[in-house]
Amino acid sequence: MKIVIIGGGPGGYVAAIRAAQLGAEVTLIENKYLGGTCLNVGCIPTKVLLHTTELLDVLKNDAKELGIAISDYTADWPKLQKRKTKIIKKLVGGVNGLLKNNAITKIMGTAVFVNKHQIKVVYNDGNNNNQGESNHAATIIDFDFAIIATGSKPVIPPIPGSNHPDVITSDTALSLDVVPASLGIIGGGVIGCEFASIYNAFGCKVTIIEMLPEIVANMDADIVKPLKEKLQKDGVEIFTSTRVESIQESAAGLAVTTSSQTGEKIITVAKVLMSVGRKAELDTLELNQAGIETARGAIVVNQKMQTNVPHIYAVGDCNGGVMLAHVASAEGIFAVETIMGKRSQIDFKTIPYCVYTKPELASVGLTEAQARASGYEVKVGNFPMAVNGKAMIMGETTGVVKYVTDATTGEILGLHMAGPRATDLIVEGALAIRLEATVAELMSTIHAHPTVGEALMEAAHAVGGEAIHLMR
Image (cartoon, rainbow, N blue to C red; front, top):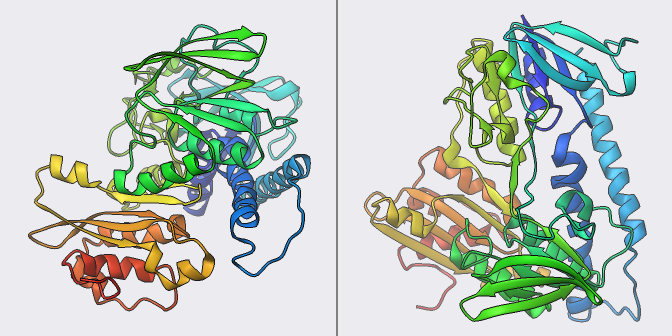
C-alpha cells in the first residue's frame, strides 16, 4: 500500500513512521524543513528561550534566598540564539534519522495535487538530497492514500500599517539579531504571553494588547490570574478589552493606536509582534484538482480525519482543529491506523493545553465556566502552591491546582494548574479524564513526597473541603 504524506511536521513525520511500522510504502514530502513549525520556529525554540528566562528570573529574584551569592551576571542573547539553533539541528537530525531507519522516502519539495491519485512534486532548487534522489525538477507520484499535514502560518490581521518591516510574527521574533528596546505584542494568548516573558527577561519593555477581556482566555480564570499578576509585577503592561486601530511609523518608533472603553491611546514601541493566531497552510496544494473541500480556510474532515475524498486525509493545523503539535501527532497516528485497518481511538477531551511561562500554566478538560455552561452541577477543589513543600524548596510558590468535578458522580471534568512543573504534571489529569476517574480515586492514589504532584492529591481532597494541609 502506497501512502504519501505531505508535510514533515509533528503530524506528518509521526504519521509516516507509524505507517512504515504497519507495513506501508511511505513517501514524505516537505517543502521547507523537517519538524515543521514545532521544531523550527515554534514549540522547541520558544522553550529553549523560555528555559533561559526562567533561570534569569531565579538569579534576579531568588538567588539570595536560595543561598546563592552572585555579584554579577549578564544575559547573552547571541549565545542563546546559537544554543537554540544547536538544539533545533539536533532534533531535526533525529527526525531525519528516524525516517531513514524506517525506510521512508523523503522528498524535499512542493507537493501539488494533479488528481485524486497523483501528486506532482517540484523539488526545492532542483535538489532532492535524501532517499529517492532525483535530478529532475519535478516528478509525479501515484498513491493509494494521502495524508495532508501542511500545518499553519501566522495570521496577519488587516490593520493599517501591519506590513511595516518592524511588524514581525512569531517566526521572526525567535531569531532577532538584537533584543529591541520595546515590543508591543498584539494578542495576549499563549504565544503572546510566552514572548512577553522572553523579551521582558532580556530587558525589553513589553506591552500586551488583547482584544478580549482577559489574556489566555481559553484557560480557567483562576490559573491565568497568577500569570497575569507575575507579568505585571515584572513590568509588562497589559491592556485588555483593547483594539488596535493602526500602526504608523513615527520619530520615536512605531505608534500603535488603540481604542477601548476608556478612549484612544497611542503606544510607541520599537517593534510590534503580531500574535493573534494561525491559519491553515494550503496555498500551494491545488486542492481543487483532487476535489478536496475546504471551509473557513481549512480542510474539512470527518471524525476519522478523512476529507470528502475518502482515501485522502488531513491532520493537524491544516484541518482547522486544535492547533497543537501533540494533537497533530495524535491525529496522524489515528489517520494511519484507520487507513491500515487497525482499530484506533482518539479522545479530544484529553488534550492538554500548556503555557511555558513562569508560573507555568496547564489545563485539560472543561474549565469551571465551560462545565457550568454545559449543564453540570459543579464542585471545585483548589489547593495553593504556597503550602506545597516541594514548591517551597524550589522557591516557586505562586500558583494553584484546581479540579472541576461533577458534583453528583465525583467524575473529574477538568484539571487546571498554575505553578512549577505544571506542564509535566497535567498528564495525570489527562489520564484521569481518559479513564473517567473520580476525585475519590485520585485521593486514594498515593503520591510521592515531597513532590509538586502532591498538590494534585490535596486539590482532590479540597473538592470535599477536606484538604489535609489547609486550615479549616
